[in-house]
Length: 460
Image 1 (spheres, rainbow, N blue to C red):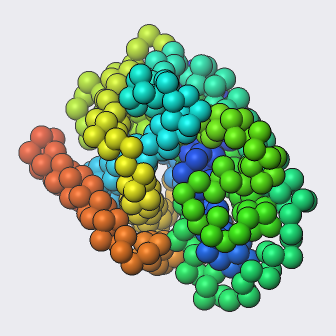
Image 2 (cartoon, helix red, strand yellow):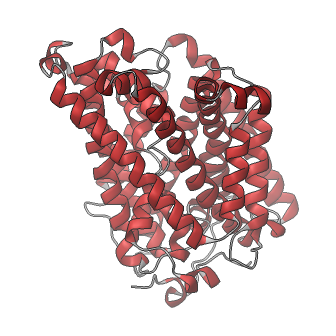
């Protein structure tokens, strides 16, 4: 069976460390994450800052696993490629479709609703004329991604730099000008309270592995891919830790758990004149998410098609090296999910938390992949090796299972959230069984043999 590798993309090598870091953090410097992080700060104050630290340990565990897997098997398919060699094509398809394609179909429409809500305030005539202006943003980044990796890199670096600067400035000035005693005074520190908020905090630290499907586009993957994820994790923890501290120092708890705490915080720091500027910054954050997901998930779909896990036409590229059919299919699917939601802001939380649940399943599978491959293929070259193996992987599995079991922020949302997760898992499991048993005629649980190590060794 044909395997997806770095292939021709590997020869292009257009992404340096800065662009890879921008890719790693591109899914969390966005409106939905800014809102959820401030919601957590309103619920827990200093306990939520502790929860961010605990969530960072869980994030470090998946970064270690993905860093080793990505350089051991440098393929665009990412988790689907690792799982096919470790656990078989059945779980490989489930891991990729539920953990990434489903996340895109749940999380991106929620983010687009926020874009439309902001544009209703900033440009009501545009919103009235177009109906759902966020679809124009989706179409724009689809067209830009068709121009290839160089265009992606230029746009991504600029967007992420702007977003991080905005979050850090708001956080820094908010802490400096606010009542810092409120951070400790709002609630006493309680370990059990901090533990209960980890499920909410982890949403701000997911997606660092989005750099892995881009490994064929990296100039020096063995050096830069792990480094990009580690740097990205540190940047996210510092930026959102400061941002949440500013929220507690500047806003009352009821403001932090409201619908638009990110806008309230910007106004509290800069005054009412900041409304338009911050609204544009928030839309830039949504653009960053769109750019990251379209680029990374389309390459994951392309890699799956090249591995025989999806229809072959999705593995093709245009003359600029962009996975055009995969991009078109992904953008169309996002639009199809977004359109019927209208302006239902109530669906945002259930969609984003369900997306986090699907993501955690993919992370657990990735940890299992590494454990299996360490014992099944102990001599295979690994340019990066996860330290303290298997402790990070075991703790990651246990911690993520706990977070998944406690993922609903309120009891009444548990039903809709788990229902969304169940629907996505049901669809992906059904597709996986039908495809493996009747199309490619494979045992879903029989792992592929590893190709020759020389062909899989990442470029240094």
